[in-house]
Image 1 (spheres, one colour):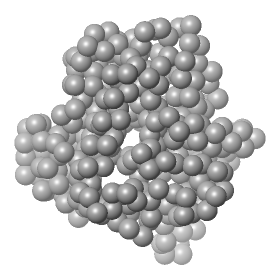
Image 2 (image 1 turned 180 degrees about the vertical axis):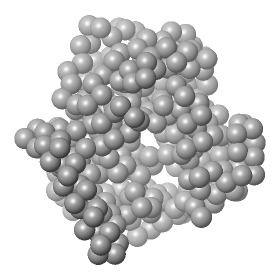
Image 3 (image 1 turned 90 degrees about the horizontal axis):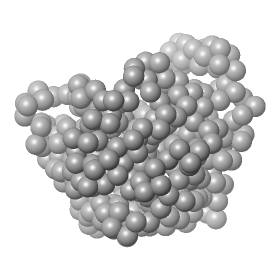
Image 4 (image 1 turned 90 degrees about the vertical axis):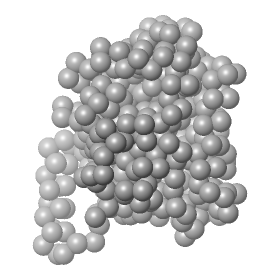
Length: 320
């Protein structure tokens, strides 16, 4: 398998847009992304439409459809921590800081999110975690969607080429129709399609119960039209080693929404017997539990709420 087998080319970038977020685009501009090779001459809204149609079709047919996002946390698990070019003194300090945290955790991989959450695996666990991740990515690509943050940015720049080589080296084949962008998931869950996805459906939320957010998440799911919502607590530190007891899952679940870091891939593949949509929702769940967090990342505030929350003021994450 060679790099030619990948369904995109990092040298071909197009402006990225998702329907329902035009006010964000007008104020902050559009990022650029490598679209799938068969859509390089199409507006990127067509790419999002492919994503939403695949999700909604799977919901209608009651088939297993896994969706997994990959950004800097997943990338660093795959290829190790990377650093942006910086002055020598800053580079030395960044690496010393990384060595300090690695020694504290007995691991070169650690991914922190919300306060109280840190996903990490001991150095002797990492080979198994990486092998399991490669296997899970292959399975998810075959049946669902892999959503990469391959937009040029400080988060992604040190990793993109290395991750492509890792995918090739590990034989992860990604069909054209399974390749999507990281922010397609946020657009789906925070944009105009969210209500249509959840309305009348039975939903299970699978994440850690940091800050006792269980009840807030269940309320948020019901407010978006779900007919039933349940909560399954997952590990806040080592979800990639967790075994899910399907006996404790609703047998008739339609949609599983996960917030489990890198380990979400490992959990998602265990849900195949449920024949449900399984979406690695990540930060979208944080926003549902604490709506004030919607101000902190792109594609978290749709046109409908933009004027109320942002007006004509640029969010902190907006490019300078």
